[in-house]
Image (tube, rainbow, N blue to C red):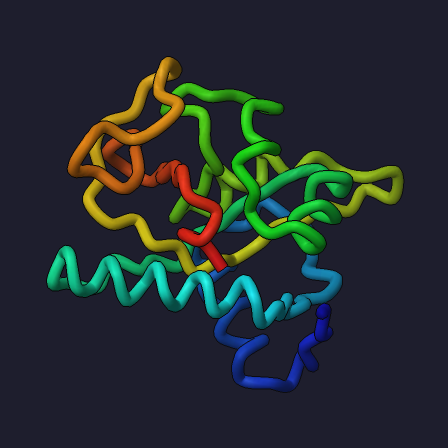
Length: 163
């Protein structure tokens, strides 16, 4: 389900403030912010989160950006962050779903639609134990949960790692 946030809501203001700080003036304006809710995906995400906390004995959740063309955004809204969509725009750090702490980086992958609008997600992502990724990785090596560039890019390989 999609819920448009009011621009007077604290959640909206917080997202805008964090986005503006990260993107540093690279866009013209935010048209709207929607919260995507799906109970089944959320339950799967929570189960994965509990498993990570038990196994790793620490919280490894990060708020990360994902930018994509409108067609991919529509698929994500309907089918979550699904690895089967991976590889359309690159696999430099592995064949998974890419997220970044840098909104400007994700913005570059949010190709404009016919109206010039871009689509981005701010997701809760369980990064777990990370290792440096490479283009040949289809899964994480044993003992790791996601791959990274070592700076701001994180790649997940399990659909329930992001919500």
